[in-house]
Amino acid sequence: MNLFLIDIDGALVDSESVDMKCYTQAVQDVLGIHIEEDWSHYRNVTDSGVLDEIITKHKITDSRSLIHRQVEARYLQLIQDYLAKNPSEVSQIQGAKDFIDQMREREDTHVAIATGGWESAAKLKLRAAGIDIANMTFASSSDAMSRTEIMALAAFRAKQDSGATFQRRVLFGHGTWNKHASQELGYDFVEVGDKGQHHHHIPNLVHYQAAFSQLALQ
Image (cartoon, rainbow, N blue to C red; front, side, top):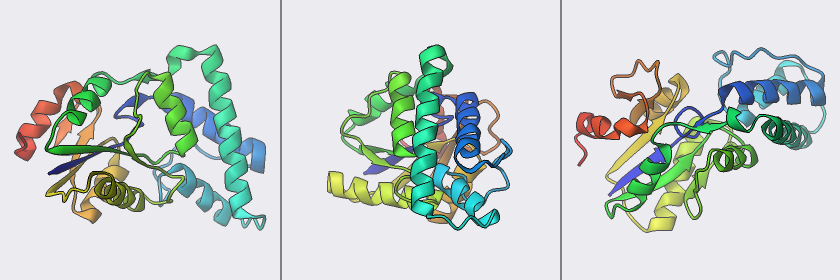
């Protein structure tokens, strides 16, 4: 049995410009702190992980859980407001919906979402892009701060949901953070995106058969 974990941002949904603008604005509005849009220097490139590092760096002593709730709520509101004015700014990446639909029909495969975004924002973006994940296994940055924890939790929940034992675990995602998390967990990694450098790479999920060939999957 195969387990396919799929990240949202960059693999299923194109929302990078919206994400960065709204996240940095939310942090500014709640904490009065300006942050750069380059997240490469953060240890945990997730919504909650970045925020937690900001709290530590700036020695903020207020309740962390309260700050997380406040920033997430502001972030969600900003995305909603932005999409109300610019509905086309969040879109489905080519092949995303068809890939999920086809993989969910396979008897030898269980599909789960493992995203570094907060659950509320992640599901909002999926709805905006027209992607239905009803009844799918789901883990997000609302559950854990690190990519490895999110992916491991998604795999654990997938086992609970399916009752299956997985011989292969494959993450389809974007970014070096997903690659490193996959390596740490011993999962196969397929990089999705135009600028991929990983040896298992496809420009979008239309080309998933190429990844299957590379991984010797049927």
